[in-house]
Image (cartoon, rainbow over all chains, first blue to last red; front, side, top):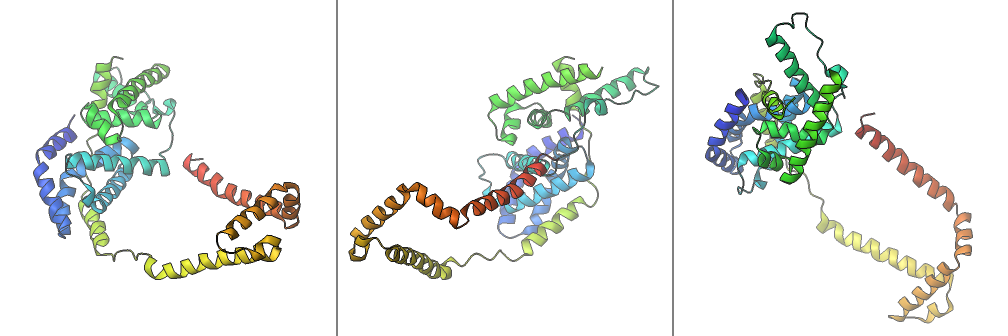
Length: 191
Length: 134
């Protein structure tokens, strides 16, 4: 995991910063919310992008998530990390927004990348295959896709994915298993 | 494809950087939200007497109408016995289902029900279609 992993790791260290900024915002200092936005904008946009695969929409979704977070800031109980609360809230926003205005459904034929004539180069072939796999995830039914998206977003941490989705860990594990099976089937079909 | 291969591929992200104006846009929206006046709450305290009066009037009208329709025992009833009389009257009316349906039909109940069903369908069907993205 490239930048997002580092950002997320870095943000995790700053839990006390989050708490102090939240307290300042709740005390009436709205400008302190900017620190929260700067700290979490990367992860939230990248999480949104996993859901919609459109850069512009990912930013719109992330902005909506920050706005909802601001409105609901007083509801953060502090028994869990601020990031856990924020990701669960953002996931909720993304899921409901995408249910309201879904992303265009793509078939696996659309997902398969056209073969580049230079594909005998091993690196290019690997690159194409990786892109095909990532885009094939997008054709999965939402409940499996969301489980996979959150699992990999949280660096393969099932409890964190379960918390973001608001589901029991067992359910997430089952969806991951089924999601991977469906994904393999789709990739086999496309070959 | 093995689980490890899938894990390796899917763990990689497209590494999106927020656009330059993102923080400013979010903070503008937050400041607008913060400066907006709080929503005006419904004035329950002021409305309550009026609502209570409405309910009492409706009950009064209902009882008066029942008395006018004339159950003989109803005119003399008072106190708790009036509710027994009302119950008896309603039971008598409702048990005559055939007569009730005829009366309802004469008042155009069928059309009213049809209109309600059509209204319900015209609201729910488009909503469902929108949710399915058709």
